Length: 330
Image 1 (spheres, rainbow, N blue to C red):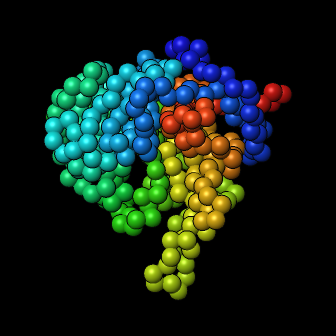
Image 2 (cartoon, rainbow, N blue to C red; image 1 turned 120 degrees about the horizontal axis):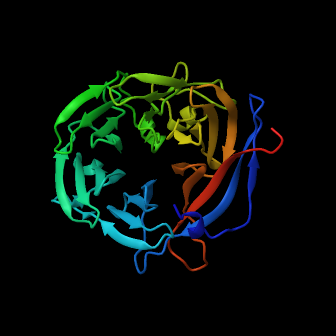
Image 3 (cartoon, one colour; image 1 turned 180 degrees about the vertical axis):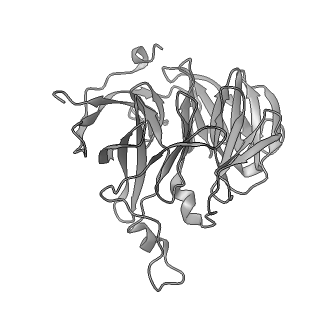
């Protein structure tokens, strides 16, 4: 993949962490990719993925569209438009790619919408559970959708919308607090599902039939479970956020798994932290300070979104690129 040539190198910003093993890792900023959308302006980006050809797909829940860009951030096309008819989207929350198809979780319309790569509408099917939050496509064309409000971890569909099966069990979290978890559903290069409940550890690595291959859990500094304050029947959200750190999208990077956590400080804003594990679940390094929430991975590269434009007077955000590396001398 010729992604490195597309990155505008912006110097090195090195972020180091203290670890729990003999290994020490750091995250190094390698560059940034401004979005060149012509006269178009993005809204709020809720998801970012990259396909095997280096194209980026940015799910925009405010503009109700998916921005398809090349590896240099140049707009190829918009996929979907606002509405509830064929090929239209209402609050899309995630995107996945399978062969020549772009598959969008259309949360506001409670359905999945399938497009061709050229943006042509193919079909859609209903997702009959509330607040669907994540979508993945397997290597053989199955589609997994999950919801924090369902008693299962995820439901698997075929491309026509027929339910293949529901996998795993969980306690539904019918609380608006869990919606703050952002993206929390992902897949490894081997095709295994990485699943976070958002609410608390553990994070799971699973097969598509629901078999758990590994669990990721650690008593990480600053980690706090979702708990209601003692003796308070209707607590204010700020009281819960004083201790709770929602667990976001896990990422399989190199031969490790990075579990991302979000700390919302009512007065000082949002901070992100990462717990690094081996693929088998052994903690390597905990409570890393992360500059952004990262959404996508390519080898040892991490991709996130910075909402501040690169150039003065520009309107659109840009993709930030970081690299995970083992520190010298280890």
